[in-house]
Image 1: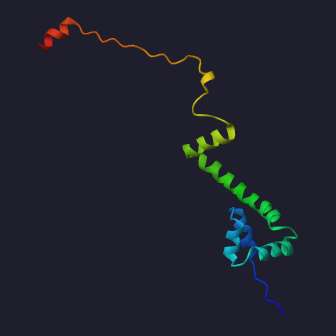
Image 2: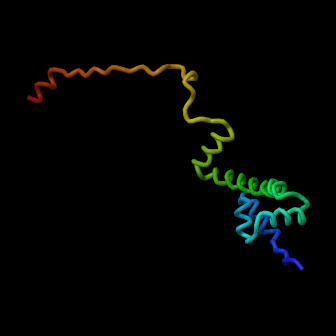
Image 3: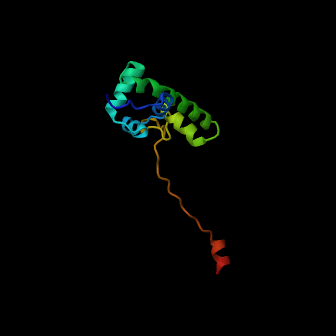
Amino acid sequence: MGRPKKQIDQKAFEGLCQIQCTKPEICEFFGLVDKTLDRWCKDTYNQSFYAVFQRKRGTGKISLRRNMFRLSENNASMAMFLAKNWLGMKDHPDQDEQAVPAVPVAVNIVVSSASKSKGE
């Protein structure tokens, strides 16, 4: 008689995949080795761990994206992050896009003789 099979909670496994846990982290959570997790995925899903992980983590990405959009409604930093990363916007335009080059301006200070005499 062999060792009893480790019990793995399928809902907990899928939840860990959704929050992008690594394979070693999932194994640590359930207290098992990676070969046992691979075998369980084959038995439960009829697929390898990585195939299951790719599929199940998609729901986590959707949830994260939804939260980011919701947060951007009241958070300027998140709105700027989304604009830069998804819309390609920038803080500073490229040099060749600037119409007028920066030119230093000289400022001359003129002191009138009337203000000189008042101070004396």
